[in-house]
Length: 149
Image (tube, rainbow, N blue to C red):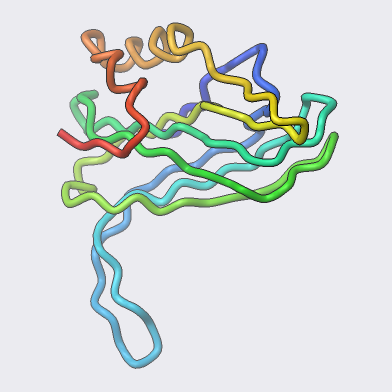
């Protein structure tokens, strides 16, 4: 299952989101090896009316029992023009990806061309995550680095 958090004041809108676990595979002459993980894909739109220099999306994964599995930040440092949309994807390597069930995405931070930075409302995001895991630890959202239990 893939869930995009609705953020009415965000400068980016997540138009599409998919998340799925990927098993490990060994490499060959024509392919590279890959560790087990979660593939995240998004289609996002710039609805800010301003040029964007960079953004970070927050990804949170839950297992089949709706328990926290991992947290990951997906960065884009490409310029994002007004009224534009783009597709992007990230791969998060985690050893227990086979237990993945629900992926959640939110707009975490946006840096505009003039240097202003928009930061997400963590209480809004936390409220949505607690609909999945009732006792979700909100302090996880304030961590900048990836985290797995």
